[in-house]
Image (cartoon, rainbow, N blue to C red; front, side, top):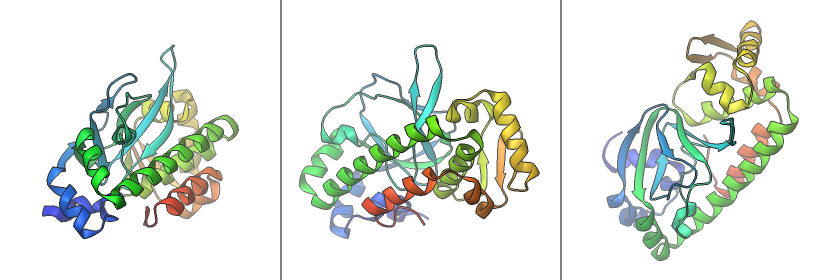
Length: 238
C-alpha cells in the first residue's frame, strides 16, 4: 500500500469523506513505531496525535511504587492523543508501543484547526473519545473482577484485531505489566493455553492457533469493548 492509500488502513481516517481527507492528508506523515517506544509519560504535554495502521499502542496507568497496568489499547480503529485536539492536554498515562508497526502522525494543534473546519472529523474525534473512555471503564472492571486466564485471552484477541498477523510479539515482562500480575503467573497461564492448543508460546512471541477457542475462554469484556467501538465508530474492526 503506497501513497495516500497507506493512511486509509486506519479506520478513523478511512471514515472521512473524500473532501475532508484531502484537506487532512497533507498534514499526515507515516512513522515506524518500534516495540517499547515511549510516546508520552504522565504529565507530558500531548503535542502529537498518532493514528495506528498495524501497530498496538497501550495506555498504562502507573502507581507510585512503579507498578503498572493497561487501562486501554488503541490500534487501527482509532488514535492516541485526540483529547489534546479538543483543548491542550497533558497525558494522564504512560503511552507506549506494545506491538510494532506503522502509524501516521500529525500535530495536535494542526488537528485542532482541522477539526474546527471539518464537521465529520470533529464528530469522529468526539465519538472516538467516548469509545475510548468506555474502553477504560470496562478495563478497570475487568482487571478487578475477572480471572487472569480470561483477561489474557481478551488481550490476545484485542491485539489480533489490530494487527495483520496471528503472531504477537510480547515478552513475559510486557504481558505481566498488561495484566498487572507476576511473570510467574504469565508463564503458568501461557502454558495452560498452549496445552489446550490455543496458542504456541515461545520466547517473546505468542502465535494464535485457535481464535475461536480464545473467544470461548475470554471474559465478556472483549465483546463489550468491541461493541462499544462498533456502535460509535462503524467499521472500527474487520
